[in-house]
Length: 187
Image (cartoon, rainbow, N blue to C red; front, side, top):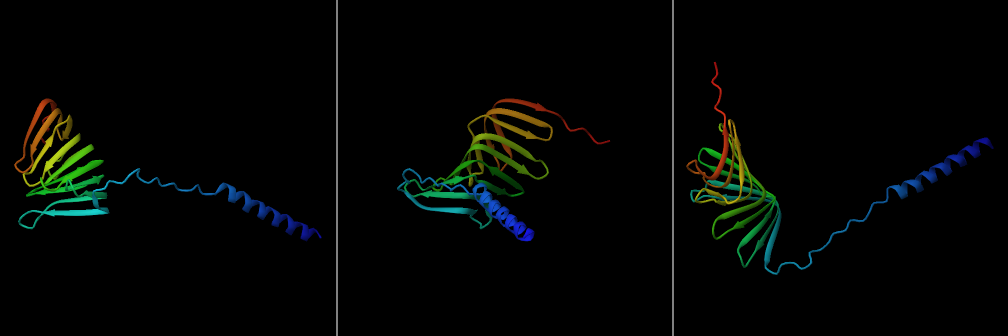
């Protein structure tokens, strides 16, 4: 009899544990809110985008990666979420990232907004942060109409706006505040 009572006790404890676990681990339902009204001029959207644009000679000009791209037919633009762009020039490689972007296909222009970061990779690295950047990919010009902060080895710079001629390495800044620290010579 003792043994049957013990088995009954174990069975009751197991049932109680299952019931308690059911209440504790009940998953909450996932609620997906639809858009209030979808735009009437999106002709396609892509998720997990890996877009490559070539120059006239067939070389990679830039590569854009994004979790979501929506193309708007009437305006011939694409809105891009979290664009990550690798922009290539002869002997130079740039990386751009932002929270939002827009590809203006007719003008061959990329507009980046919100938390924009431009980085030059290689021997002379540079990082530039701003809130808005317009890149004309064929002309190799980046316009930064809002305040920016640039950092590179030995230089910290803040400016109200800038125009960067990326192809020739010429940069023009407006209302600059900078601190330059020359490199220490190695002895």
